Image (cartoon, rainbow, N blue to C red; front, side, top):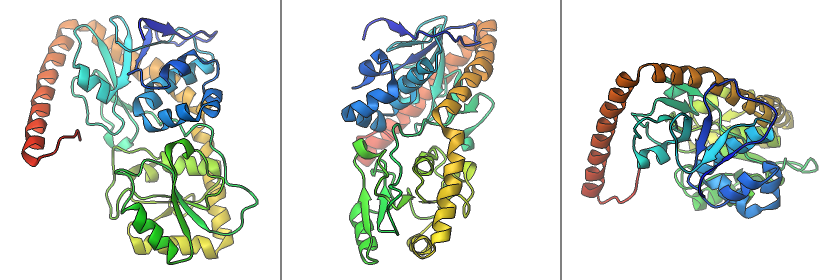
Amino acid sequence: MSGFTVSQGTKELGSKVPVRFVHNDRFGAREAIASEDFEALLLQRPDIMSSFAENGDLCWTVQTWCRLRDAGFGGIEIATEPAEGRINIAKAKTLSRSGPGKGLFQVSIQADYPRVLWAQFHIQQNADLLCDDAALQYLWPQAGIIPRDPTREGVKRIGFLGNVEGNLAASEDEWRELMAQRGLEFVARPPELWHDFSDIDIAIGLRSFGNSRHSRKPANKMINAWFAGVPFIGGADSAFAQVGTAGIDHLLATNRQELLMQVERLRSDAFLYQSIASAGHQKAEAFAPDRLVEQWVSLLEGSISARYKQWAAHPRRERNRTLAYGAAQSAVEAAKAVGRKLLGRGYEE
């Protein structure tokens, strides 16, 4: 995609500097940018729904631009390259690959990628990572969530709706066997169905067994279940504790025994089942797209604009800062590359 696109709308951001979202032009980006209704597009195109569900760059950058556009905000740019005189916002992995740019103000959406040291500001999805040059911004809930069928009775199917790789404790086969021993079915949905909770009775979100906080991860598996009206059993993720209350709007499990105990509690106690589902559904309102649009606007007009003003007022100091942190980042990446080679690992962490 050459050039850039500017959103059309009657509302204007309070920031005096143009905002530009920078993306990687993955499948579905062009269609979303050209659409008149982002949510409607995803519901009409399961292939694009799947692409946005799986790709963090699309989910964070293109989706945010589309949501702001659909909320009536004009004058916001989207492109595949950053530009001077802009507040450039991109996912951390995108920034890390391109490196620091001379004369560019760049905001890093860290998500679950390592911190980009030289970025001028950082957007975090988990409060564990907050510091002086960062702000918390919740990830968008899964688009087009289909709630649990209200005619379903009892607990028969346990579901995991997300990327299994690195996000599900144990293997799918182990989960199936574990549930089958108790007369239950376990399903792990494919990406194009991560929004479909219609036949799910309990949703789970255990990335690992134990007490790891998973401080780079968001609370979205729980939030999506809240929207769907499905009780959620989660692990010790800090994000779950940040937005929810264990025992009220979700249940906590840190090992297999606790997990099975919580499943049996929900299976045998209809009142508990309904209480957990209802409390979560009420909590979900705080994470609806219109509420997150408000959060984004506040962030862009507030902390990010203030940091840009500071950056623009001290060009020499900021240039030296970027060079120093850029050199440090390069050293870190070089050390990681050597480590991966020595360990025989050819992938990025």
